[in-house]
Length: 417
Image (cartoon, rainbow, N blue to C red; front, side):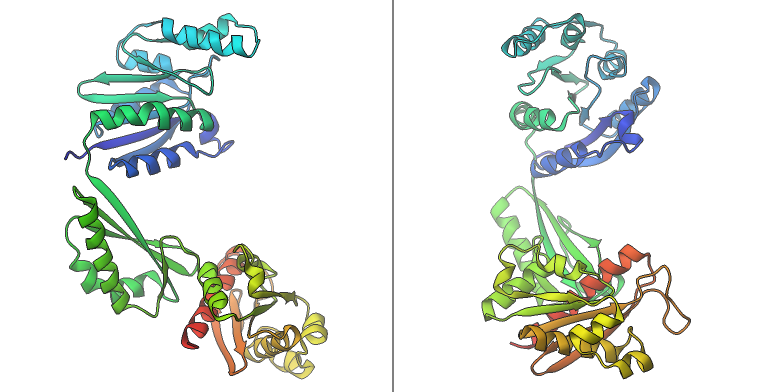
C-alpha cells in the first residue's frame, strides 16, 4: 500500500469575490477520502496567471496528485489551459479527439459551432484529453515527474460526472491506496474542553493508525475517529471496539453515531415509546419547532407549539401568572416552568419544552445580560429547568438556545426509561 497526497485547487475570481459558493472542492475531497487518498492542500485562486503558476508550484512540492477545477471555458478570463501550458512548457495545439467531441455536442443540439467553441479543443500538447459527457470543455490529464495533474470544468454537474466516470477509474488504476474509515460519535451536554479532559486517557491509548478529531458545533461535539489500514474488516472491528470503550466512559453524553441529529434521536425515542411532545417558545421564535419538524414522520409524536413571544401571549395562551411576569420577569425560571406546564395542559402531550431568553442585541441588563436563557422540560412527573448564558450574537443565541432545549429534553427522557 502507498500513501498518496493530493492537492485540490479551484480556479476563478468569482469564488474569491464570494459571488459563487465553492462546492467543488468539498465534493472532490470527500471522494478522494473514500479512495484512501490524503488531501494535504485545498486552495482557491483567482484568474491571475502569476498566482495560478505560484500555487501550482506549491501544490507540486507537496502532492502526488493535483486536481484543478475551473477556467476551461472559451472566454478570455478562462486561462487554466494557458497556465498549464506555461507551467509544463508544453505548447497548445488543437486536439482532434476533443474537437470531434465538441463539434458533436453542438451538432446533436442543432447549435452553431463557432471559432470560439473550437478554442475549447485546444489543449497543451502534454495533456491527455478527458471526455466531458455533460458539456463542451474537455478535461486534461497530465503526467510528469511521477505526478498527475487533472484539470476539470468548474461547472459542478460537469465536474461531478467527469470525476466519477472518467477520472476515478484512472486514479484507481494508478494507485494502490490504503483503506480510510471514519466513525462519528455524536455528543451533547458537554463542552469540547471538558469532553477532551474526560476522555484523555482513552485518547492517549488509541493506536497510531486511528486518530481522533473534535468537531464542535451548536452545543454539541462530534468525535470523529479516522482509521487507516490495509484490511477493511479488521479496521472496522478495531474502530467498533474503540467506540464501545468510549461509550462506557461517557454514556451520559453520547446520543448517537454517524451524523444522527439530536432532534432525530429524540424522534426515535418518542416514536419507540409512543409518546408525544409540544413546545412553548419565546426567545427561539419557532426555531426549536423547526428543528423538531425537520425529521420525516415527526407528526407521529410532535403535536404542535405556541410562539409566545409577547407577554400577553404567555398570559392568554399558556396561563402564565401575571404576578410572576411582573415580579420575576419573562426571562426567569418561574416563567418557563409555567410556560411548560401551560403547554403540557393545552396540547395534552406527554412532554413539553419551554424557552425564554434575551437573544439581543438589545434587552439585556446587568442582572440578565444578553444571552441569558431559561429552558424548562415538563412531564406528568414534574419539571426540570436549566439556565444558559450564551453571550453571542442574536442568531447564534437563538440556535444555541434551541439545541440547549433539545439537549435538556434528551437528558430528561433518557432518565425516564
